[in-house]
Image (tube, rainbow, N blue to C red; front, side):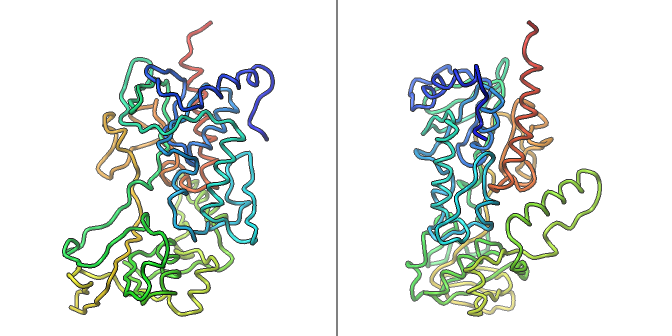
Length: 382
């Protein structure tokens, strides 16, 4: 699959290439579909829009391809082998060591993917706001306005790290950082480090930091490793079955009964060293460490918050679509209260496993199918 249609579609490629360049005078540009965000979700949507022959442009606020993967810690490994970590149309190459893909390898893959399918990318462009307008949506950016019949928001979550509030959090004299700002274990050498969070990121950072520092792992509930033969592909299949069951009114336990953490090789090695032992969540933070409800204290130099992210939806504020939970109600990817807006890649609420490489392709395909129908309906009769 190369994502191109024969004939007239192929003859349009030179114009699309010109539009993909960094052009500052974007004032008043009009497209059928505008994608906000050039990471994995935006790229998958671009693949299907290209294949459908729809006029579209992608705005990305990064100066290079790769999305959030460009900012991940160097040793990060995906949870699935490359054949189950690919976007539609092109397989991710297997790493030279035969293991799970790395963050840098994923950046290289996304760079090649966008080049191969000649996705019309404009970067760096920061989107400030999206407004309703006659015949579509008005997208205001730092380099001018765009008008689109349909907008796909695919900005992800990486730019909005979440740190929960605990009493005394502002009094701690040591260092606090989030997963998003972790670059490697070296700065923690010889320290006492508390790692907060019960997910995959926390376990991977614990495995790495524990090789150079004295670590304490705290979680809100006891974490459980998945069986060694369960990886991202199996998780995606389970998430899909759960979504299908829930949408038909049936119950489904999902992956919760299996465990929380994928046992990638570094996790297995840490398990052998006996460091994957979690303590209950502390109740407060002191100037020198953390304390539990029974007044047990632990002194530490650094607290690492592996507590997740929130959807980056600030640019959609003028549309007033978010509910009390901070999310936007959707039917599939389409916003219920603004059907000209689709949301892609933010998590299960915008499609089963849509925040993953393997999951976003299916959701992007379904979104573009619906968008194609929307555009055909909106066209005046000939």
